[in-house]
Image (tube, rainbow, N blue to C red; front, side, top):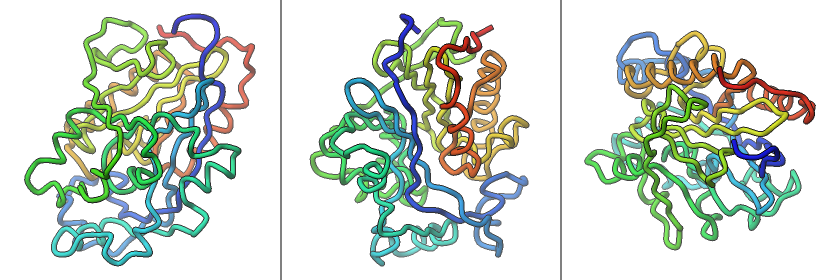
Length: 298
């Protein structure tokens, strides 16, 4: 990262409600997803629906935007037919009236108008729920993820076009570019969001073809890896256990790359969208001594 001072001054987390999913969703047991999805009677218990809030001198960057409360108040929010059945078997949500994106941002001292950029890890419903309130912001997704929205059966794969392609949104499609930067190895293609090395987008396909993660780096603080649904538990990721939804080989490959980043940065903090431990891990990272020397890539 260039310079001694980072444009990132603070990183916070808010949760737009909770979600229950199937245990096999969190950790694959090798059975086909459709089998456990249609037969399982077990739920995990509530998991957070995290949105990460990155404060910069010029405003806010979000990583993901949470779940829209309309998904639990509007019976027509989810599709009918097989896609609706699969979605209702996959997850159940609990979102209170005060758990909207704008209200939660206000609760930690920000205004929704402060958001100038939102990076979406992927386009599933519990990551795009804040889009209706972000028509003033730049919405960053991978070109690969955007292409998936136009493929046949996208709705069966959890991509609900009517909640994504909203009027007046400002989309910024990115394609990670080749790099020989050793500080992000083993990733050989990345996207430096603002060209200063503080927020680097990493391609981590598997959960969806175009899934992204975000590496946050600041002098004096542990680096953060915002991971979307690449994992549901940072400890499971450390042991190469992958979720049960997505392409297993890609999930494993992306997981191994992140674990190699962990080896380069021993104090790296992995923060996933639905990890119960993420808020506490972030709080500990934010309490780091700004004068302390953090790990350098090896």
